[in-house]
Length: 234
Image (tube, rainbow, N blue to C red):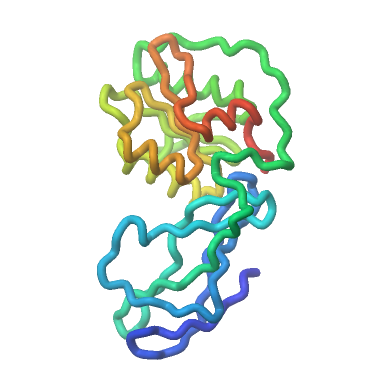
């Protein structure tokens, strides 16, 4: 169980108990943000995108990623940012391979599915994820608009449109993965906007692009790592 820490609101000076948030690392281990007990909380006046993320390293695999900056709303009306201990310089970057994960076993050649419709694109992505080593890849039941494919420890989106995938689409996949404690993988036919690519790199989300032959190609380091090592066991 995550231990709560006392935090004093900088606006009203009232002390209250704060429980640091926990997120799933890509290795499958829970990562609790290391809130500084003696840190100085700050009242949030104007929010910027950079201020909403903080770097932290997983205690199990040493992987350093970016996570939502912990904050809370005080009863006085102030929105307060809670300081977090900086990730050690020795921590691995999100594109580094964890030392305790060996490369995946050799696979047979992937057999692509020709893409003629949006449904074909989802089918091609499902077969590719299965080829990578994910189990029980399927379409989600009901009208789950936040993902196109799922499986144990997996959520995936497939963008069959002719426009580059947006930053918002990548962020929605990442948030879905947090809620499901699953790894997110994205497939796109038209590529990715520059800010979407940058955010996926920071969040360690594998990005693939598919042509009409149905053969996915990696477009960032997390995707290359996924091909090389396969999915993390959960």
